[in-house]
Length: 69
Image 1 (tube, one colour):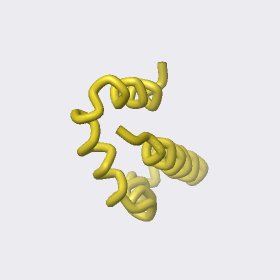
Image 2 (cartoon, helix red, strand yellow):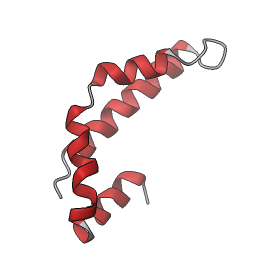
Image 3 (cartoon, one colour):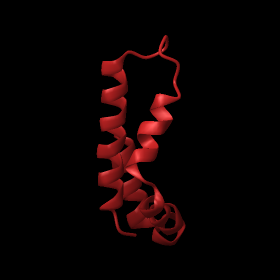
Image 4 (cartoon, one colour):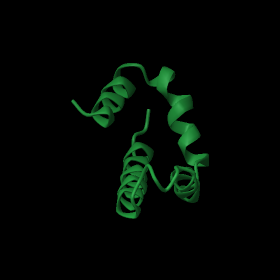
């Protein structure tokens, strides 16, 4: 089961527990994701890996924002 599916199921079962965390995602800006990845040393991550990681986080953020507890 994916982490996103776990969040979906947990939100259905314990909405009051997940509501604060899901609501906090609204304050997270996508540019912040790019800045986080940019801090990783160049020797540790190629440019294509940076783009992949950033896009994966953006996609996950979009999916998490659609979950309503």
